[in-house]
Image (cartoon, rainbow, N blue to C red; front, side, top):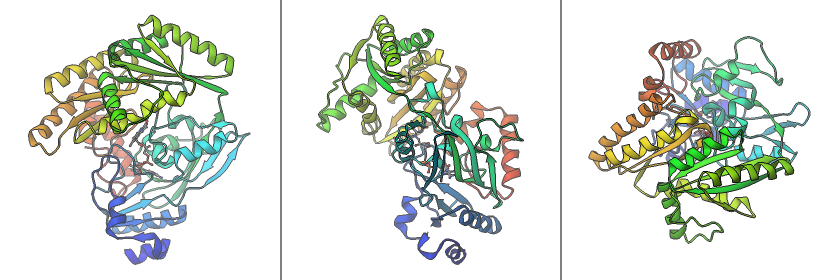
Length: 456
Ligand SMILES: Cc1cc2nc3c(=O)[nH]c(=O)nc-3n(C[C@H](O)[C@H](O)[C@H](O)COP(=O)(O)OP(=O)(O)OC[C@H]3O[C@@H](n4cnc5c(N)ncnc54)[C@H](O)[C@@H]3O)c2cc1C
């Protein structure tokens, strides 16, 4: 196999050394299941040749972008070949009339955003991992981010794909057009498929004009329930912020501690009295931003908030960026889930998480995209403690059950991977899972593409 791989991509792009294997066999979960070999192809023809080889020999093949997924999607559970798309990182075209970008899957999300913004255009999906995540990985998980509330998720910007199927054919889906009713929508099928149905080798993405201006308000509340209630009042008042993020009291305590420990000089302090906050951004033309800001201010103040504004909005958003490292150091292990509930149930869900924390004695820190009802629920444990580890299994299940009981689901943007596959039956009926499995079998008869993912 190794000789054939070398002849496909060149010997220097086939790696079996332990450092490269380790680096490319894990993701943000930090779980590692070593691949046998990591391959770095340069184009779709090379990807297709690798997949044909893997299909002929029955060897698992896993595609990998930035490797910062939270569901274990890029981890080669059953060994085999990891195809890193890192070398396929060219932005091929940005067209200001068709309003599209054509690019390879290994382009880093932030690089695409900067490139289109330099031309006055906008690609809104903004996962907080955008400096490391790839566009291919974003499509594979249908990534969202803070702007999803107003602008939607990756799926809404996907027009066409070039994909290598598990049987090795290179197919084109969708196109460069914004309307398309031509046959089954294979583009949509690939989005969120977590690299189980094909490897994306080229993308055509929809762009929109870049908003002229944006401004941010930080609204501090006594409790998470009050913050969630203020978010629903904003929506009821027909205000659609471009970002609407919530952090609970434990998130704020962790960030305060992080700022102190790291001796960070910040223009934005978080008072001890604050038990939750909303970060709210509005965008549009300059006059629209000013009037929207006034409306937002009025609603949150009427909801009991203390309001902070800053000359430089980045001073406020820095608080959100500290979140992941700050929460990550509270306990040895952080299990980051991303449930979704209908917006109207966010306050109830936050209450339920407080009750679950009290019952279990395990810290549960919640923050996230409250405008979408999409919360990141962080269960903090010491996995070296067998009692705690076992208890965490029951708590995890409850986190998902409660989301489903409230009319929601078990993942809003991180996907299922293998971290959540055992919980899939909580969210989907047996016939739905069976239909999905039939699609997988039809497209990947030898089950070589990212086996062990999504399905229990
Ligand atoms: C600190 C932090 C913050 C985050 N914030 C957000 C957030 O706000 N919103 C959000 O949605 N996610 C977020 N995430 C999760 C993660 O970054 C996203 O899921 C992201 O889309 C993963 O991209 P990646 O390139 O790292 O994918 P990888 O981890 O490399 O792969 C993820 C999956 O995509 C598949 N894949 C990769 N490339 C391809 C391809 N070319 N074709 C087909 N399948 C492919 C893989 O096989 C795997 O199943 C966050 C993660 C971290 C660590």
